[in-house]
Picture 1 (cartoon, rainbow, N blue to C red):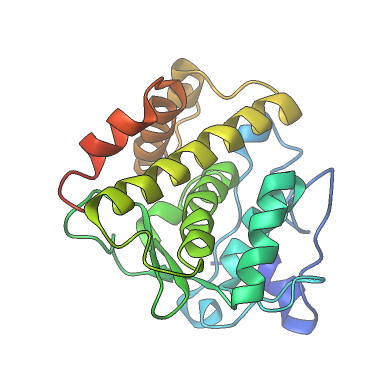
Picture 2: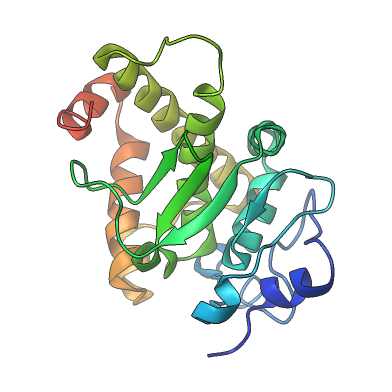
Length: 227
């Protein structure tokens, strides 16, 4: 397995962030090969995944190197940049986990306030970068909301409110993507691209959310057991 471009960049210096243009890191050329939504980060070996990536101008945020390009993509979205800065101020870390961490929901990723850690399952990293960035946008919303003073989120209704805010963040992210880079892939285009099973699963979840008109109702269905 090749060393990822993100790791190569972070081995000697923090990963640079860009306000526009390609979010891919050399030698990854997938941002230029085909439609934007097929661009996908290279993966590291387990050994190299244990390294820590840092980011230029974003002191406090650390991650596994595999998240470098997703962070660079989120940095281009004004709201995403604000969430990354806020998370960096809190000292949030982004890592990969061996499985989907939640037993109560079909979660693709989780945030743990006690350790200030966003965790994305290994199986859900084998997807295009814009999908990884969507998972991060959701969990960054949690990281920053849970950093607010008081216990406003501690009740069941507070839990639902947290997830409503995270879902709304995802919707805004996908609207920005379409406006910035072009339409999101259709069902047929995504199927024809023959991406991974994880990509098919996450794509279906994202499109269902993107098309829902009632986020509150959807949250109560998706998080009925978790909240």
